[in-house]
Length: 240
Image (cartoon, rainbow, N blue to C red; front, side, top):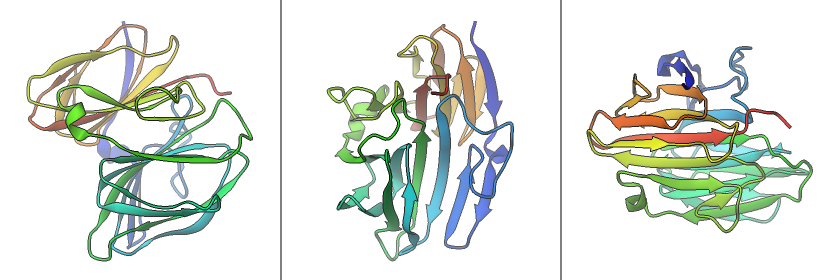
């Protein structure tokens, strides 16, 4: 039988910087909760709102797999590797910071708010050569099923990272039932309700609620509302 812990949306950390409204599932910046430092190698899940034309100037990262998922609007990205791109809703961006990289992220639009998830996963290889990737996915491929966004394998669907981790998004009609089994033995699963309502292993959750699940049994999920969206993060529990 799986073991689970529920985190309600309003229990997350929150920072209001005016142009940036940031909600943190794990300790980040000025939000610190020693009981919420990480879930296995999942270190950061930030839920950000960025006003038009605003953003983060050049800043450094190293030894982290950084995944960005725009929910509304578009991000303009520049980095010290020479990349300059716009990541729109439907795109997935990954950056392996490795030995070190600088980058900036700004709302591409002056008059449209940007909403995004940024996820940090601790890598299983340190000091790799920094790399950048960005792809566009077909959102119809996640209708009433989970669409793979991230995996450890370059030949698989989605982008790849230096970790035995898998990320999926799915959008479901009301009363759609499905299950999820961890891709690697010993991994744990972190599930966030992006919008709508779901029953996850008998627990009813709604917008931005999350649940951590440990165990080898398939996770039973059911959508309780129309156009309900879910994010599933499957990660190793042992830190490297």
